[in-house]
Length: 286
Image (cartoon, rainbow, N blue to C red):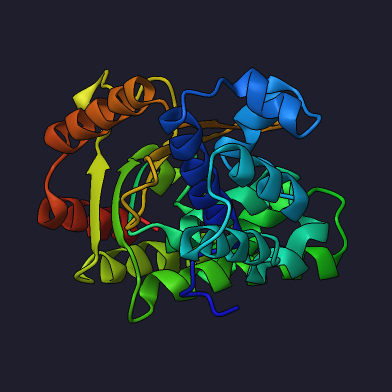
């Protein structure tokens, strides 16, 4: 699978949203749908959210329950089951990834718009290889060199998608702290800051810096990512990484709160050109 193609994660989400639409159109409860495939109501909920893999037999039985017994719609959805169970390109990195992260990589690779607020360090999509290596070493203490190399390789692979011909829009607000906190030596930091300034001039990248001088702001709850997809059936997703897990939010009211927070961060931060000047000034200090 090429990096430009939507991943299996998104195909699961698409299939789940279609099954939910069909179920609701027939006025069938999740409990009744679960009973028809010998599963719980919560299993139907997870299927409709694309959180679990699909068995062809289960989908066949649900489609029959929903009145889709033959024709192109049934065949199209069953074909989507097969595609949804194909591993994404990032599958080969699973041995060095936290259990929750492959889902994020799949969503990121399929997004048409990625909006981010980052605090701790430069976002992975904007890291140089040397800076990424320093970040990964810090986060994987005790890991062997091969595992560190593999994690860095994944980060660079994700960047190729951003910089490719069909790359997504990336709107990012970096807290100024991320530009000062050292990862690697002075040369690494200087190189990272110069790279940030250069990549901020790309047409699909909008980079702003929230300066120390602003004080309190709407990003006080910490870093988060908003992912939007070209498929109209897919809702936006908020991703927040935690120490031992990750949180995915797709309820409209939750997403709206984070959209508002990011909009305020963008309004309160200097624009891209002024932010680029700030990055250059900080680079000169290293």
